[in-house]
Image (tube, rainbow, N blue to C red):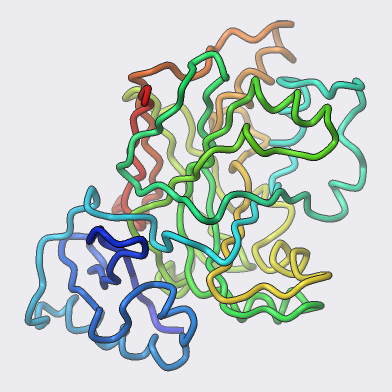
Amino acid sequence: MAPMKLATLKDGSRDGVLAVVARDLKTAHVADGIAPSMRAALDDWHFIAPQLDALYVELNAGRARRAFDFDPTRCMAPLPRASQWVDGAAYLQHLDLLRHAMPAPDGAPVPAIVRDEPSMVQGAGDDFLGPADDILLAHEEWGIDFEAKLAALTGDVAMGATPDQAQQQIRLLVLANGIALRKLAAPELAKGCGFLQSRPATAFSPVAVTPDELGDAWHGGKVHLLLRSTWNGRLVGQPDAGIDMAFNFAQLIAHLCKTRNAHAGSIVGTGAVSNKDAASGYACIAEQRGREIIEHGEAVTAFMRFGDTIRIEMLDDAGKSIFGAIEQTVRSP
C-alpha cells in the first residue's frame, strides 16, 4: 500500500469532500475528481487508492495544479459516517487503572478473560466530531474525560478472518478522542448492558494516513510512537502506543469479525493508550485518578470543566506532526 495522507473537508454536506494532504500538512488538494468522499474511496479502494497516491506524489513534489493551504479547522472527521465504530481495550493497564478509579458495582476485579481476548464496545458511528469541533455537553457534573487513542479504518473483512487476513484490510489509521462521561458509566454498567449515554460523539484527527506512511514506526500491527495529550496547555501524557499494546490492530479486527462481517468503512479503536510506566503520564483522567487512589487512597485530579481544552497529537522521530492535532474545547450547548 502506498504512503498517503487523506482528509475530509467541510462543504455543508454530511460526508464532506475528500482531499489529499501533503506529508508536511502544509498543503492539500481536493480529490473529488477521483472519489467524492472517503466512503466512496474505501468502497472501491483498490481502484481509487492508486489515483489518490498519484495525486499525493504530485502534491508533495509541488506540482499539483490546484493546491491550497491546508487548514485543519476546516476538517470533518476523515470518515464522517462509518459502517460501524467499535472501540477495543488493547491496553490492559488502562483496564486495571479504571477498575481502581471506578470500582465495579459488585466489587469484582477485572475478569481474567480480558487478558486472553479483547474487550470491545459498540459506539455511535453516525455522528463524529471534527478535530477542532467543540465538545458540547449539558453538565460538567457528568465527569467529562478525554481518551487519547488510535483507530483503524478497514476495508471489507469477512466473518472468521484470521489476524493475518484482517491486517491486509487495514486501509488507514487515525487518532481519536473518545470523550467519556465517567459519572454516567457506573450506572450504565450496573444495568448490565454496557455504555450508551456515557459515550458521546468521538472526535478524530484531521488526517488519516496509510500504515506505510508511518515507515518503521508501523510494525507488528502496532504504531510505535508517542501519543501526546495536552490538557489546558500542559502536557499530561505521552505514552508509547506500541510497547504495552496487548492486542494489536489485526487481533482487534479479527475479534470483531469472529461472528460477523465488517464492511468497508468500519472503524476499530484501541481504547486509551496506556503504559505500565507511570512516568509516561496519562491519556485519560480516569487513569490518573486510579493511580492516585492506589498511591494515596483517594483521587485528587478533577474531571474536565467548561472552557477546558484538550490537544492530542502524534509526532514522528523528527518532531513533525503525522496526523495533525485534535484540539477541542469543552463547552455548554
